[in-house]
Length: 343
Ligand SMILES: *Cc1c(COP(=O)(O)O)cnc(C)c1O
Image 1 (cartoon, rainbow, N blue to C red):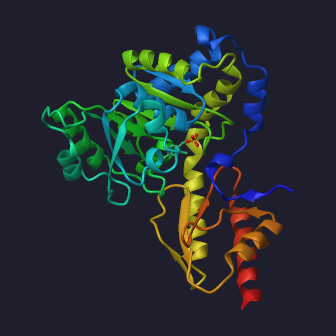
Image 2 (cartoon, helix red, strand yellow):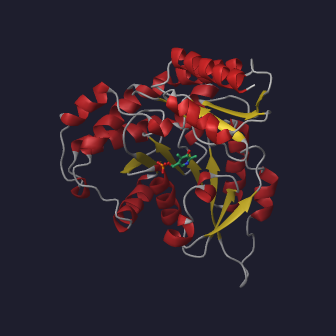
Image 3 (tube, helix red, strand yellow):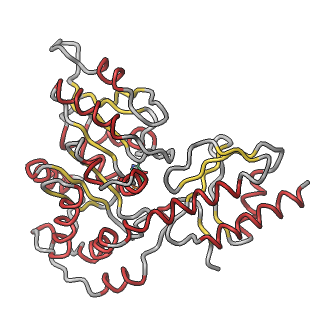
């Protein structure tokens, strides 16, 4: 059975065009810098993000951790939102790989608060203090919100004032750019380094990129080797990444429209409450009604729909390339049936 999979945009399988490109990709040994397809993807990524250089890595987590590992020394402090992916969903890697201390601060629905960040920066040399090694941003935030450029601009000014670099976790930077109706480079310009995923809404099967200054990427290339991320004929994967960048990033508006359509349909249930603004391809909602969650998830599954269980009562449905408008109608129909029978 072909499932309608609303769990995440990471579930996207490669398109036929990607599979063909992968099958016939020209490859070489990328650890020697010999893979023409990887080199092409890296050049393309750097150009699109408006940076000097880029590095292909296995995952978004890898790209973020490599950024921390390259920017920081052991014992440095990283100022970061307490609800950011690096803190919440990377299994404590920052402590293991870079040996940094994450100074987590509360965010304003995903945006760092400039005044709070400025307060947390270590301003004097003191035998007791760690050095502030990095500030981390995230856009789009994993709560489905897009951080506005004014916020990034303020963060840049603070970072410059104290000479601290900025890393942007831009796993979904093209969704953010699509929402803001700007080029991704307009977001990336506030950060020294940016990571982004090819394997989410852009449909590539594997891979992320880390972009930044040439010198930074050269340093990161060695650290990538240390982390076991020096891949050989990675052009097989990069071939799909090139299509992700040349084509798939221009169609994300459709996913955003579908998410809005889904949210609108969900609001027809008088017991459903949308709990976050729908800005990209995610809909967060609560079901204010007595029901058996496990049974609900199972019932949808039996009808060919995959969803994640709620996180503390909040469900997240994610739209992507393989979820079409008619699929959303089907999901709504099955939900209507479930909640009617359940009465
Ligand atoms: C998905 C995601 C990542 C990590 O991506 P993986 O490829 O799953 O490791 C990093 N940051 C954010 C905000 C994400 O949504």
